[in-house]
Each structure stands twice: as structure tokens, then as C-alpha cells.
Length: 506
Image 1: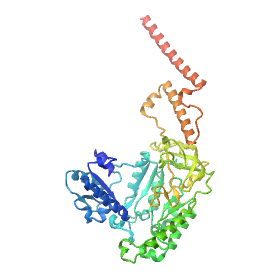
Image 2: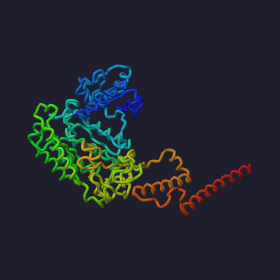
Image 3: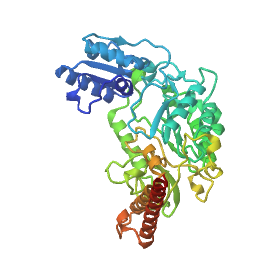
Image 4: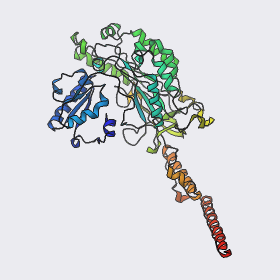
């Protein structure tokens, strides 16, 4: 929605008080999120700002008292958000909630992280969990075609995206409404990923029932060097009786089969899960409730178990490949490494130097070269066509990186999110023109060499013992530069001499 409004000429303000209109995007999975919406609506009305409410709350609860007199737009009408904003600014109330075809995948977008593309593969779901309101808001399963998703993948890779996150209410259910399945889609997408591993794929949350029949095929995809060996599979309860009451359509034994098969077939496999301590809820609210004291005790017990995990013990000294796409929340450290912001978007080989409870730290051994993804396939050299693991660092075959989930802002299932980064190898048009001048070329090459040395030193956490600016060139460097300059003067002198003789002969 921000992308469409920006493309139409609207400025997105960081300060709500400066905005001419507020647009609130809502979630209805949990009560606190809906309560937060109510607070924002009250604040907006007090500020006398025009207001549009979008997302799951108006779609699933259109008759809420809080939404009276407010423009609302449903989950399948976001491609009309500009129209809704325009009419609301004119003082009109607009309510677009009818379900229709899926919104286009190529709508203008404002990414919070330019290196990450969140790609919806389907909306809605096939389940009807008794504690969940998402189905009521999002509706029945609707899947995008394989061809449309593959085309979107090609586009974002060409845009420089380094991670593609497949997103949906239930990834495993993909395609069941259009006659395909998740493995077909995954294999088609993986075939388009750059062979140098510069763009990685992350598979979204999947419920157990819909991947049981495809476990081996999904495991094969998770073993691919360009796919993170991570999956979010909610169990919700360890009791078959409770799972039946939840209408989850699987048993504890079947969940174990999912986990055991994936951990057996995928080296380094990491699985995150969700557990409900206080079922029932939503349609199940009519059931007998679990006393709040028991719910809190269960939650504390689970938290204690979770905090006892030490997933990174034994990693000291290991060499791993990482992708750098974000800066740590302290604004100083990149997760795993200390490096300049110019390294964002690249991939690197690091040696793990120490481990913490939720993270590991290391030093950069090598920043890996990136293939120009816009280059035609026949222009890529044989050396550049290697798999990201076709070298001495075979441990990169399966990344430890999880997807964000309800466990916290940076961790999920005890695993921290590894971050990533890169410096473009393409010269600008101005630099290409300058490269025709040998003096400009030489100066730029020396400057780039010096900058690369500085970045390597910073990435390794070393203190520079000398100034690596171009002004500190050695004797050979200066001699070469003087030689080039003298040669240039001699050429100019010869040309002037010939011109002078020509004039005399006339």
C-alpha cells in the first residue's frame, strides 16, 4: 500500500502528527493487536485526521462499533488503496470488502529492507482451527500460479534482492486449489536462483497436514545450497485430544514424523514451532476455559525449557558462510561480524570466534564475489557458475538462519537471525568513461585497493596501523604515476611538434 501511494505522488511521513491522513493496517490473530488498533483509531479521531483502516480486522469484523464512519479496505482490495485514500481526503466514506481475484504481484512496493523480498504465494487456508480467526478474515485458499511467482522471483533478483521469503497463511497448502503443490513451486523457484548463492530462499510457515505427503521432496529442496535449512511448523499442543478439539487435522505422531524426517534428511535442519498454553479461544470460547493460573504455570515451564537450550555450543572455530542483509539492533554490530555498512548485501566466509546465548560472533575470512545477475547466462564464466558450496567451505550447504516469528524480534526456536551485505562490482557510467583515461584508471584502481584494504581490516576487527588513503602510496606507486604523466606529456609534445612542422611546410 505504501508503494502504491508513493508511486501516485504521496509522501509517507515518519511523524503521524504531520500526516494529512492515517492508514492503519490491522491484524486479527491476537486480541492485543486489535486492542492496539482501537487505541490508534481513538487517537486519530482526537487529532481529527482522515482515517483508512485496512487488513484483517475490517475484513473479519466489518460491523465493529469502532469502525463506524471510517473508510475501510479489505485484504483483497489493497490494489485500490489510492482510490480509497483519494475519496477519504475528499470527505467520503469508502468501504471495499468484497472478495475478488488476488492482487497483482508486481504492485509498487516500499521494502523496509531493500535486500529482502517478502513474496506471498497464496492467501487464505484450507484449515478451520477452532482457536483461529484468520480463516474468517482471509477466506478460503487462493494460490498464485507457478509462472507468475517465478516471474516475480526473476524480477526481484534483477533488482538486487538477496533474500526471498515465501509467505502465506499456510505454505504447505500451496496450489491445492489450482492443481499443483509446494514441491513443484519450490523446484521452479530454486531453478531461477543465481548459482553463486547471492540470493537465498526462505520457506514460510507450514502446518503439518499438508507437507506429510511431500516430506522427501521438501527435504531435497531444503538441502539446496541456496535454500535456508529452516522451517516453521506449529505443533500447538502435545495432546491428541487437544489437537482434535483444535481441529488441527494431525496427531502428535504425525508431527513427530515431520520433524524426524526433516532432521534426518536435511543436515543442520532447524525447526521452530508454536505452542498454545491456554486453549481454547475464538469459536472454542464456548468450551470450558483453562484457569489463568494453570496457563501462566504452563507458560513459565515452557519458557524455562526454551531458555535451557544452548544451540550454538560447539560452534567455536567452525567456518561458515553467511549472508549480510541487516544491521544489528545496537546500530554497531552486524550479527556474527563487525563490518562497515558497505558490506550490506554481500555474502562472506567467516570463522566463528565465540558464541552467546542467542547469537554467534566471528571474523570475516573472505568476502565472496557476486555474479552480476543481469548478465546473460552465456556471459557467465565457468568459474562463476559454481554452486555456493563447490569449494572448501562445504559447511555452507544448509544455513542456520530461521524466519521471523512470534518468538521475538530476532530469535525463533532458540535460533538467531543471521544478517547480510554487499558492494556492487558495477562501475557507474561516469566511471566507465573515466576508465578510458589511463591516469583516471590508475587513480581509481589505487583508491579502490586502499578502500578494500580498509574494509577488510574493519571486518576482521583489526586496528589499522597505517593510513591506507591514496596519499600513502609507496615508491613504486609514485614512480608508475610519474611515468604515466611523463609519457602523456611526451605524446602531447610530439603531436604539437608535428602540427608545427605541418604549418611551416604550408
